[in-house]
Length: 365
Image (cartoon, rainbow, N blue to C red; front, side, top):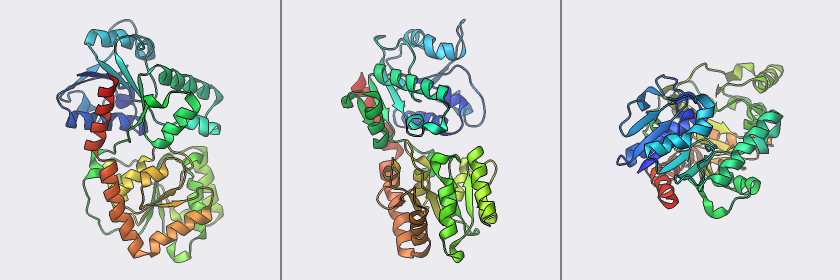
């Protein structure tokens, strides 16, 4: 089978959507090497993350070579390009579909990651919300099948985009391959960990307020991995005003090797987000053998599974209580670590997810 992909994010985005694109291609090429994978991108930014895909076995990288370039080629020129390449099925990996694919003879799948611009509109400019909503609606209307990365996102798609449930399927997001292999713990100072963008939706301020309520002997540092803007300054200001500056550690650039080391050696991973399309950092923590406290809302119970502790993200008191439990109860910690990793390996294992996604493709053709 010749499968085409919108690979713009794969070659030009180095966080969430880009990571999802790269891991999707990784698991498919590993599990189904008999197929051909055509990666369509308006441009390529070469670095250590993208270079392996330029010569990856079974993959063909296609860039514009005619008059039409950039976003115009990605939106309006891709269908003719794929026809010429003999593509049988196209997968839009990041919420969008090219114009003209419907009735082109090429089967189509789109992945919808989340609808955060609708559930948390205050985080987005009015103009961006309108553009995103139009793109998501077009993709949902015109794709033959919609893949959602969680049951939560599926519910949101059905609520906001009025599509028949029969065309919507859930395939969870794979983690980077590095997380599926165990790493030995090393001697390091005691710390807790937060990984993710520092914005109001992800609720780092709620974590800091929960830490403030903890007994003094449990107030160990929190390592925060993730960039942010105005909300990050709000968190820093709150910490300064409440004498907690010394408890927040903000490392600079962290690659996957270092991030896995941080997960593996942390006493606790805390992620009480208000809304996530999936919650990949929770899965990365579980795979790394790190105990997890997350939210009891959105997709986080799916990502965390039955062993992670869940808290009301609106309640610093509840977040604090769950954190204290995992820091003081060794038996609970052991259950969380062992059960959580087993759950994550089974539910989010790359072979399982690759087979589920290939099943979607075959049902779509």
